[in-house]
Length: 44
Length: 226
Length: 216
Image (tube, rainbow over all chains, first blue to last red; front, side):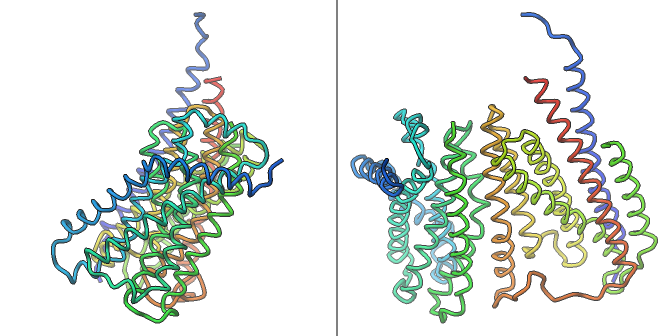
């Protein structure tokens, strides 16, 4: 049976992209919330 | 203080009375079932063999589609007539309302199921009498399974944005075990297999019914809280 | 605390990668493709773990009305969906060279796919309700129903694929004899991905708390 390294790499790459992407999303959202909390509220 | 079952009975009787006078949902579902039979026929072509093979799946797919339409409306009457607040104010255990609504839905969906079987017998030449006692059992258990989750989810989505979308999206994946079990058991019953060959599907169906019913009774209170 | 968890997870994943590609031997029948298992099986395990956490947190929320339990359920469902997605993708990629197609209606692949759709619906429901308290209540009910549905999905799909009388145990085929290094690599990766799950959930829960603070 051939070894199909490309499939192995593809599987690990997809896992890395998905999990890394989710991590980056968390970081980004956290930064957004922080910025919003830091900004003083404007009186209406 | 009226007893639990008396309260459930009041809700069920009210729903049946409303439906009997307006016939809104039932008329629409009868028409929809007829349309489904035509749609299935056109989709699969005139080949008798192929239709016969697909019959159990189509029957239950049609049933589930009809219940997506029928059950989704369960609590909409209450909203349209501004009765939702009254439901919320009902004293005592709210799961009585669930039981009442479920009873009404069971009647409605059993009628639709029997109609679908009749239409399939007529148009697709299915010999329903071959699998009769077992098929009736599948029908009852399957309807109970679909209606018990359907009633719960209908209450849940009644007050949500895009409810027409959300109700089927939530209900369909949860109903996969019921759909598989009913299709498989119907297949066995129609093929005239011995009861033991598909009894495990009926067990699964019964287990699903019990789980959904108990979960519905226990959690309904939280949905109608405010 | 969260930071430590993150570093632990990262270290675990690095060790897991080394175990998967260096220590574990080439599998005899499948060849190197079998190395996909070290990401496929742990992510599947984490997915089930995540949905079990959703179940427990949902019950706790309904009983105690603690906002923390609600945030935990929300975070765990979201992370669970991500991991389920990775499971399906890696399973599909594994399936192409071994079974010859990207997708077969294999029992385990199918039930994981159903879970994916079910919990995607859960997140959709959460997004559709603006009042926090009501959304939490509805989501908790759905989280309980979905979790109770998992064994039903598992059995029905399994019987559906095997066509015949069901076996009495959950696992088909009985215990297979895997060489020790393969088992070790799998266990290390299981631990590493579980740590990663814990890190994600901790981070997401904290984020949810801050988002709710910002809105209040």
